[in-house]
Length: 478
Image (tube, rainbow, N blue to C red; front, side):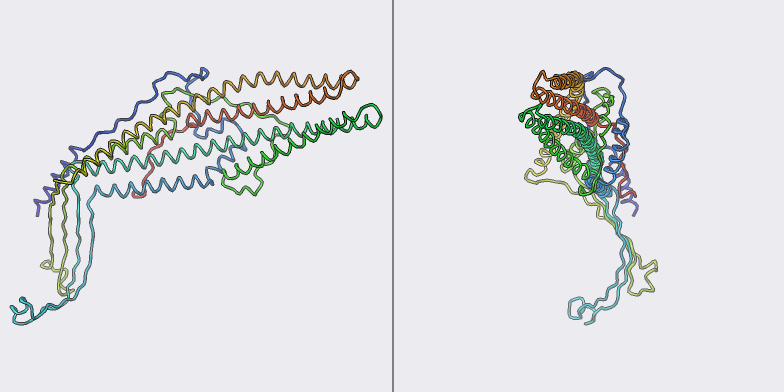
């Protein structure tokens, strides 16, 4: 009875000595020393709630609602639970399986069989009661099961990182949509003030026309400019409605309910905050999508070990122990006990028509594909950061130039109106100057919005202050 137990302990000791397949080597990070379009600064990090750098209480509230109520976040959380549950299932393969059973049966043998005739033409009948336990265990001599668990563990970590990636993407979409909405509100404010000016101008021109001091052409031009301003106002209001509907869906509420009132009247858009960019070498640890890609690489590498383990023998042990008796009262008697240890079964693959070899080649090819995909994701991440940093630089320069154009257009409008009032120019000069000033004001508001969106893009491209947490506990351990 003790020999099989000794063999089991010896096999368990041998199981820790070797593991099939290559050990995982993490890919190298970014080799470049600095970002091409980044301004010099300290290598700081964004906070985990990265949107707080905008210091906007409304945005903070929207972000919290989205992370709590958005259906995509809930779905990603369930995918993480699935991966953790799958990990718990595969971890169980490292341990013996023990089952308990209780049985009651009634049987009768034939008196006409050779056995019955040997007993003098008698049959055997009666009840049988049994209670006992059985176990089975695959001895992981070569580490195949450990590779299976390693792959599942990496997949669970990848699911956790992907969940974090969904949170990052959602928070960026909320911030982008919010600032677009604020920018459109700013344009609405500009257009409403322009429309009020157009109405006043139309009334003055019509009064001058009625007094014989103007002509019908000037009246028509004033009416055209007012109608154009009203049409632009309706178009921008349509854009605002669309953005508000999209923002409502992001925060997990019905788009049929009003979400935000206009917040731009009487106030300009804020300047974008300075986003700490850090160093390129830290990008691999700052973005959840890249961390998930590395975890996927580890899972693919573990599958190579699993496929390689199919070439080695497998060793399994089974046994049972219990009591059996014809009478229920005798079931606990020591003479009613029964047990068996074994078989200690060894299975060695001899011929499979190349199946194991093909599976190994398939696993290796999948791993190499995962390596290539990871390299592509890393390059894409670098491009996203450089694009966002370039946008920040160029939009800042564009804003400085546009402010000059805005001031010049405002001055031209004042001069044109003064010349018309003195009668030294036509109303056409006034309308041209008004259109130029309105276009310059709207362009300035749009550029300021784009600067805020560029800051959001930088934060998202850098991972938004994300740091990989320890793997969350699996369902099996709860």
